[in-house]
Image (cartoon, rainbow, N blue to C red; front, side, top):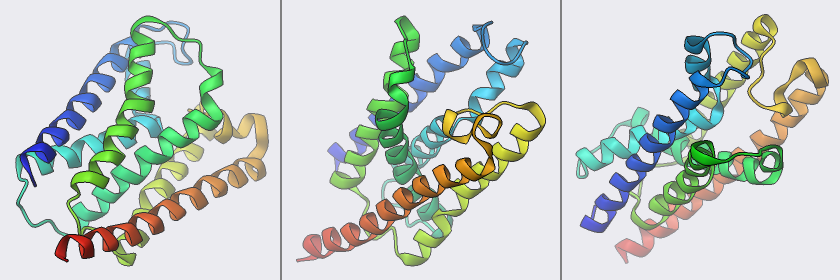
Length: 211
């Protein structure tokens, strides 16, 4: 990885740390939130796909920044692809379906901007510009779908008990399981399309670099 790439990777880590670092205390202090206590509101932040996507992106970026020349195994490659794809889905879904639901100001607006806009931009651009290349194939793509499925299963099972759903499109109480599963299927199609595109593009960029 070039020096510019490494600086960009550290920038990605900084964006994620700042976004989550601002969001956690804001959520804990928000007494209008769904949960009644500050610890519940604090830990509930991690139930959001946005936060988990940022953690995947930031965590894998941190590994690349600390050990830029290291050869990584299949687990890391899967998590890296998950980080890039999930943060891309986060940005796309937020700006096409959820942005109009927000009326934010101050630090809440800053956290929202970092988590839903800046992180997707720097994460995807970082992958496109600096790689590393040769980190994905169709086997990795297959494994990458496991994380979104686990998040969905966790969200629906937890929601059945606590009646909290982090996003309107997965709210079973409002829409029923049929509509929610259809919504999630559409997101899954988007995810797989991005995964296929990323794998194809990764091969092309790798070949161009070798040439």
